[in-house]
Length: 199
Image 1 (cartoon, rainbow, N blue to C red):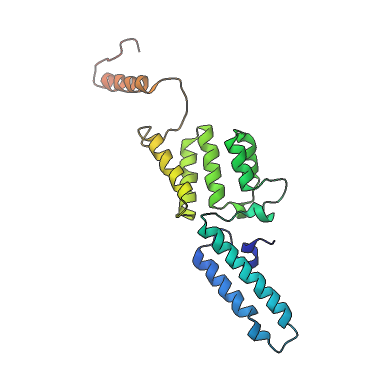
Image 2 (image 1 turned 90 degrees about the vertical axis):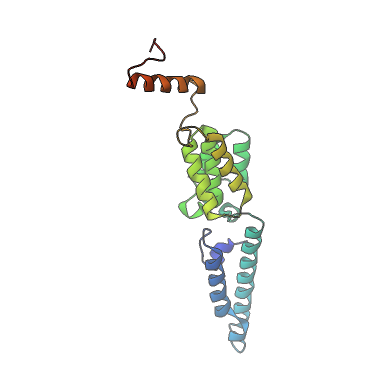
């Protein structure tokens, strides 16, 4: 089946209002009554059927919380897996391959699902600032998706207290307690004291 977004001539990132507007324009253009006494009646009826099916599929995908999955319709091009395949790679720890496949998806296909999965990759790599940005963008594009929202809020809870809410590294060089002591020592030294005499 053809990509329903391409049938309607809209981006997968289009708003519901934009999709409805594109659907209505095509429905007016191909309505069977317009071609009732024409040689094009059969062709228009087929086109109208395709437009109706595409609109219904998009509505069903969005109602179920799914984002536009370009890959399901071959929209990613090349040797790129589908979003469910990329999810499987992430879940099984194949982060390099998941990131490679995500990076091979063209800009047109980088919808809310892409942003969410890239956030998952960044999270697994300990790149919390990047993960936060991708999760936030996924939530902005698909605000009713509870999976995206839970990931975003979970990251916020996980990183609370690290550099204003963001942990920029997953380094284990110093434990949290030691980091706080070093910060206190620096503060004391600024005022002429010395909390930790050896450094």
